[in-house]
Amino acid sequence: MRALSIVALLCFASPAVAFQGSDSCSTAQAIAGSGLFTFDATSATTGAEGQNEALCYAFGSSTIDFDVWYEWTSDFTGTAIVTSCAGTSEDTKIAAYPGGGCPAPNAAIACNDDTCNYQSTINFDAVAGSSYMLQVGYFPGTTPSSPGSFEIYENQPVQNPANGHYYLVVRETVSWDVARATAESMTFQGIQGHLVTFSDLAEDQWVYYTMTGGPLGNAWIGLYQDMTDPNYSEPAGGWVWVDGTPLTYSNWYTPTEPNNGGGLEHYGGYWPGDQWNDYQIADGTASAYVVEFDTSSSTAFCFGDGASTLCPCGNTGGAGQGCANGTGSGAMLVATGSSSVALADMTLSASGLIPSQPGLYFQGNNAISSGAGIQFGDGLRCAGGGVVRLQVRFASGTGTSATTADLISLGGVVPGDTKRYQLWYRDPVLSPCGSLFNLTNGIERTFQP
Ligand SMILES: [Ca+2]
Ligand SMILES: [Ca+2]
Ligand SMILES: [Ca+2]
Ligand SMILES: [Ca+2]
Image 1: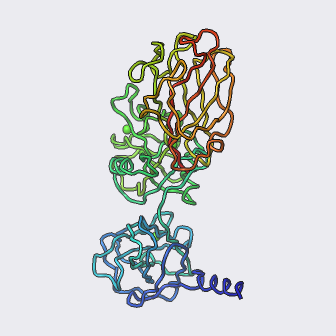
Image 2 (image 1 turned 90 degrees about the vertical axis):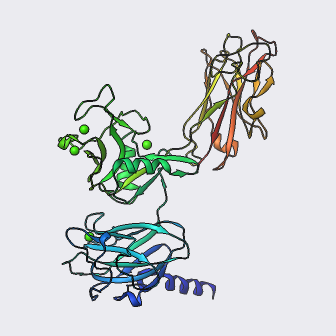
Image 3 (image 1 turned 120 degrees about the vertical axis):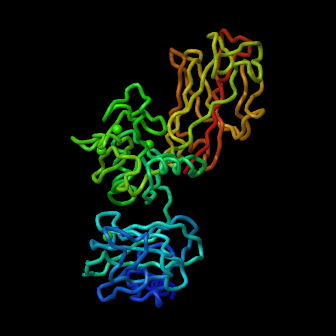
């Protein structure tokens, strides 16, 4: 009985057979939630509503031929994407209106003709439980020849498994400076966004081809020409990334770009085919932009520099270091790798240690004394509370060491955690205060999925 009822439920819920759209908005097909929905306009007529919307104007016409209608109820509050990009090879046009029956004139909240080849993608702000009228039809003069499908989903950042960063495509035609400002006003999991920046071809291609399941088309990226840069020259000099990422990799459309067309092209974006063009700032062919959310960086804290908690015997270390050890200066701890729990590629490393001596890398939940630390041995104890011993490592002959273990697993780190780290190391001969051990500065990091 149980197996039968699950099968029955699956059949009933399958949108591939259940929905084809209604020829008239007055009898719009009710659909709900995210998923794939079919449309069949092969016997549809062109209705009276939604035929003169300013938002629908494209290639000299606002009409949507052979339209079929749905009333869609959202199950999320966020940006709804409705797209036919993967669902048909025909020349569609899609519009959305407030729910509750046939729309009034000029009530469209989104409309699109071509996003990916001749197929269409719209996005609009949806509220859970609210309904919206969706009009799926054809570019004027095009005759439907077969049924197709469209997908509805919430636009959320997607994680790149290679670097742990999250990326979001916003389908909106805005100028480059508006795209940049909007990207930088967004946050995801506590991390500020920025227009996408590329470190290498792999990241570039993942964004263009993989993250949305198909070629992205023309879209802004976080590249611009800094006319105050000493290397500025037209057309190729002075290009920089918005976030200060070094421009070590470029992917201009060859051989013609950048060409500073019209003398005004100083903003970077994709051209079809995963290559870049220099555009004017308000070039209307860039119909999307890509936002990137890096993983969080680490923050160093609790220094033996005499500015806060004093070192135990006046053994002040240098800037950014722990208290001075037998070498005469302090040891410094840094973290590398991402703060992605899934990637688990974080490494701690230290320099300025006593050569060949052991040290214990450890994790704490808290920053002691609000991050100022307390005196402990020859140094300051910065991390405490729920201490986890991570790994013992011996320093090299030049006083450096690094972890080799999976710190995420050892530390029981889950997304959203903030952890503090420190290295406690031996100083057996020239220990300035005589306790024979010392510590580095602390490192604090907040983790993402
Ligand atoms: Ca189209
Ligand atoms: Ca990047
Ligand atoms: Ca230029
Ligand atoms: Ca150009």
